[in-house]
Length: 118
Image 1: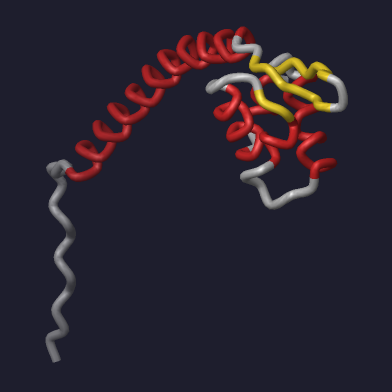
Image 2: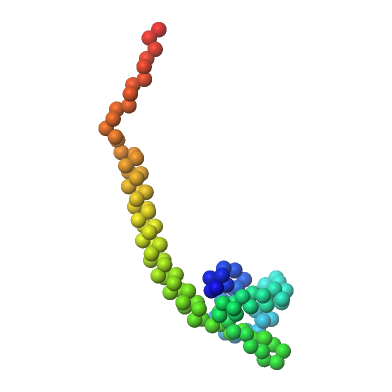
């Protein structure tokens, strides 16, 4: 669920803003050209993913970042990045060796074309 929440650039921007401190929904909505209900939908996605907590202070809804899921996602990416780097390096080495083999002379002479003797 964390990666689905992070897949949207608006939600990533909201999380980036929350790294500077808690903010009201209105403050979070300011830089975006979208309605408050649209921002609220993004906030619900982030909340369901455990990336933020919403609370009420009178009539104002405030949001606070919960970094724990981001830390878990970063650890997962780190573990898998090492695996995929090894896999891609092995693939590159294989492709390079195939390219060298395909360009190497085979030792067989090409047959000469017949000349027309007319």
